[in-house]
Length: 345
Image: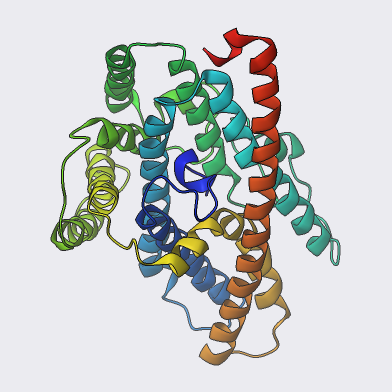
């Protein structure tokens, strides 16, 4: 999934925050990928049944962590960007990769029969309710784009405390009226439970910005708390979702402030590629598991590794493409600001 400008947009050597957040992104994407590996392998009868439900925690943990990380990094980015710059960076981060992955998925499926997709939802990421889309993960990006639009509007408010009050009011309304919705409509998305993870991520950036974290104890305890909450309280309950989001936020905050995993440059590069991996992994897994004639764990591992390698290659290419597009967009924005200084306000 896409996320913060300060991490996702900067190539190695130009980062202004730690590699640790990209490592978290890699782990979150890996969790979603592994769950879908088990789900597809069971669907195509490659492995015996019984692994999908236990692996669901990997997917849910990954998605919640992605949303929290987005909120954390968007709160940080919004303090240093104009509304135009903010939304331009978000659009260039999300849509080129989405459209490229969609085109590739359609090419894969043209080998067989092409299902009927709702292209307006798939390509625009508008909150249009339940839709059939080619990548099967677009619903999370609908939330991402909605959240980016909200933060872009907040950028017009110069006083940070006013932004924080608005977000706190949003959280209160969501807690009171919200419910878990996977594919929301335009009227449902504002109070959907999933927005709480973004809000908690923003709060994590605002609260104790200079707090120091040392060692692995705090993130380890938070990870354990996440697991306990996940199995102890139903995910659909709002207070459970808040608890899971807070646990994920503590991990994000402690990894960032404690500079954990800063030496994990290889994992950080996989974090760079995570958006492309996330976009393309379901179509690739479907093709590989559907085409294999072998059953058993050896076939499962071989197909999973092949899918991850191909997705990583695509993700690396997508990230380089995005970096080039973003630099071109920044040059265009600088030229506009030089002719109309008010655009930079």
